[in-house]
Amino acid sequence: MIKSIFLCSVMLLVFSANTMAHAIRFEVEKHYPAVTVHAYFTKTSPLVDAYVEVFSPGNEEAFQKGHTDKHGFFTFRPDENGNWKVSVDDGMGHFDRVTVEVSDKFFMNEESIKAEEPAKAEETKIVSDDKPEEVKQAEIPLIYRIIFGLSLIFGLTGIIYGIKAKQLLKNK
Amino acid sequence: MHIADGIIDARIAIAANAVAVAAIYVSGRKTTIEEIPKMGITGAALFVASLVHIPFAGTSVHPGLYGLVGIILGKRAFPVIFTVVLFQSMIFQHGGLLSVGINSINMGAGAFAAWLIWRQQALPEYLRAVFAGFIGIIIPVLLMATEFQLSGYGRGILYLFSIYILAAVVEGVVTLSVVKFFRRIKSDILT
Image (tube, rainbow over the protein chains, first blue to last red):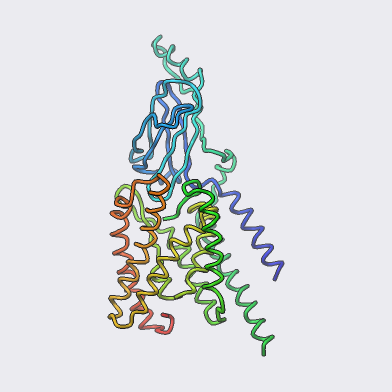
């Protein structure tokens, strides 16, 4: 029995480690003069009309406030380099923050635009606080997670039932 | 309806976990062997119910079934809700791990209130079922909205209420249908 509980715990830890990043995901595109943040749970379920606050580097007062559009996008225009914080809150218990690093390279694109050259996106990447990129890529199908969860619940029920049954037999 | 980590102060979240563990002990004490399969099946239904997302008012709501859980399990609802919230948090990232305690307390309070309503034998059964289902959602939403408000997050009590009030009505109707179904096929499953 102890072996089963141990095995269950190990599986749960391993499984949850692989899926830990599937709360809110962020995709940040920096393309002078704007930074666009895409907030979503999965590519097909964006955070629609979520409340967004943008904080400029070192400031605790919001630089900009607004809501994501129906596709989960929000755009702002940074005016200085540094680490910009963007917080997203859908008002339903889903809240997360993302740090957007705005470097000199971002503002250098300004020159290319002024020179009427086609501007290039500085970089496109998925960023989310303290969640490594490779973890985000591990998309375990929902059905497997449901089966896994149900297995845990029924397994746990079985274990508790077994313990109770043993106690009953002992008392008899 | 699951609060993520980082919204509630960590000290409060830890204290809520301690309260939840104590509540598991109190409500799970002297559980009989006959109750265990019922708890397991109800837990499985609760676990899956939160995955049914219904798009509404630019966001989405999901059934809670806390009222129904309260009706079926009575005071045994809390250990089941805690376990389910823990697994939902680890497997689906519904809410944070540190917030499992506070989420369980919110939802468990809904189930407990529903059970209290269900026990009011003086009222007709259909009324008790609808009201239990309704209150099973409204109490957790009220608690969650208050916690959000106190933490300085969220769009306030009124916003959350306006979204969940319809969900609570639907939940009341669903609870009534399930109660009527059980009354017909296996009456003793209801506490």
